[in-house]
Length: 272
Image 1: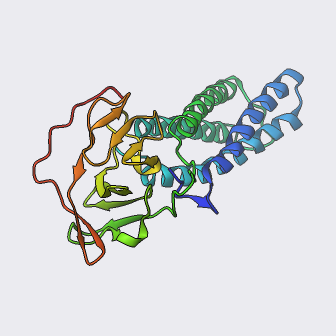
Image 2: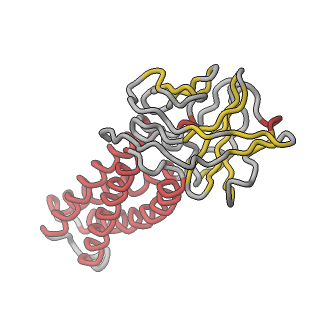
């Protein structure tokens, strides 16, 4: 899923996280060295590194929050993972703010409690970094997929079902667009048999189907490779076991309208 907080398609959050990680780990190393050698200059370097890391963490948190609430699919394993990632980062930030306040200034030597809090903070950000890597490399959050013939990425928010999702001419075979209608994300895809609409929510772990690949009339989830027939919603290949929801489509004067399902089949819950 493409990052919302980005510069020319480059996500901002990964650019900024290097500052708190590097500076906080550096501050811990400086403080340990300062106590070992009794060197106030090393303690001062550790204090300034803590301050710089906190400033970088705040900036990174802003960009991360934009992506967490604006990009990561709801009801997905990535959303839960993102919340844990955020809690660990905020906890580390609070710890290092406490360390800075306890030190009071660059001239003060760190004490045992400051070292302990810094060590805990380092463990927290390393654990959070592990989860962040999982979000990027497994859940592909912030990854800009540009496969052949995918077309320009479009996402629209509609006030109601009476508004068109797109014009028929906007999509060629194998291309998709996604619209959010009253809190539901619905994908319209074009395959050799026509225009079809289906839920953006993969029934395996909530991956965004609109960010996958549409080949023929089969869409593949980018997270774990589950495949679905967009005409019926049925599973073509696992690991998903439950079908995705499909929606009726109407063409009016070249405009594509998606109709709501009046009676939805109960969703089968699967392990996240």
